[in-house]
Length: 393
Image (tube, rainbow, N blue to C red; front, side, top):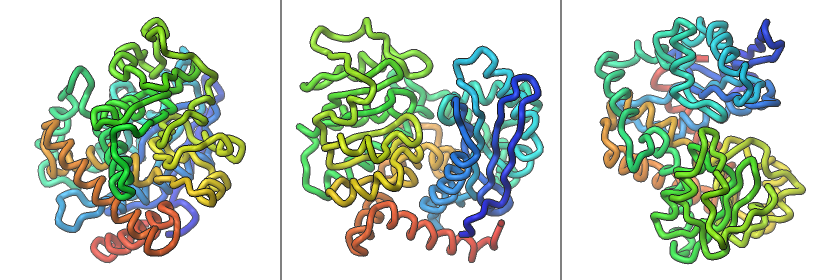
C-alpha cells in the first residue's frame, strides 16, 4: 500500500468557518467505505489515519467464498462539537459539498458523534439517495439489498437496534477469543470501559452476558466504578443520545471518580470505546490490565503501545476489534446474512473469532505485536483482492 492516500480534501463551511475533511485511501472496484465522524478538534491527519485503517479493516474480512467483496478505505470528518446547535446544518452542508463523491465512490455512515439516523436525514436533505449509494452498482439486486438492509436496521433486541449491537458483539468476541487462548475464565475477569455510547454500550452488554464483570465506565462527566461490578443494564437505560449516564440511576455503592480513573481500574481488560488518542505515554503508566481492546479508532498512540507491549500488555488492534460494524453492513447488503439478529450475531461471532485467532496466532508465531500481525495479514489480503479485481487506486 502506498503511504499517500488517493484523495485528500479539506472543506471550509461558509457559515461557521469550521472545516471538514474527506480522505480516500484507496478504491476497490471503484468504491471505498468509511464512516463520517463529527467532533471538536477533528483534523486532516486524524481522518487520514482512519482512512488507512478502513483499508485494512476491509481487507481483513476478505473471504473469496462470500458474496461481500471488501471495498477500499476512506473516512470523513467534521471539526465541530455534535452538541453544537449549528452542528446539523453543518452536516447537511458538508454532505452537499461531498455529494459528487458519495454518489460516485464513497459509501459512508455513522461514526463518532453521529448516529445513522442523523446521517440518513442529513443525506436526504443534501439531495442524496443514500449514504451508501455508490455501492449499488456492485450489487446483484440493489432493490432487494436495500430492503434487506432497511429491514435489518429495523430489528431491535431488548430495545436496542441491531445496527448498534453488532459492533459490540464483535468487540466482545475479540476479547473472549484472547481470554480463551490464554486459558482465562470469563467469570472473575474484570473490565473497564471508556465510553458507553453505541460501541461501548453494546460491548459492555455482551461482555457481562458472557460472564465478565464491568467494574468501571467513563463518560464525559467522569468515571463510574464499583469493585464488585456495575449494573450495566441500568446504566444503558440511563444514557442520553451521546452516551452520558444520568447519575441519578447510580446505586448507593457506585462511586463517582475522575474521568481518567478508568485507566487505573483494577481490571484485566480495558476497552477504550470513545475518542482517538486516549492512551498516550503518560496514560499508559497507570494501566495494570493485561489486555486493551481498541473498540475506538486509534485510541492507543504508537509510543504508548510500544511501552505497553514491553511490559506484557497486549493491545488488540482497532482494525480487528471494531471491524464488525462495518463488515455487518456489507454482509447484510451483499446477502451473506439476512435481517435477523441471531443470524447476524452468529456470523459476526464466527468471523471475528476466526480473524482474532489468526491475528494472535500470527503475532505469536512471528514474535511481533497483534497490530503488526493484523497489518501483515491485511496486506496479503489486499494483494489477493487486487489480483482478483485489479488495482482500484
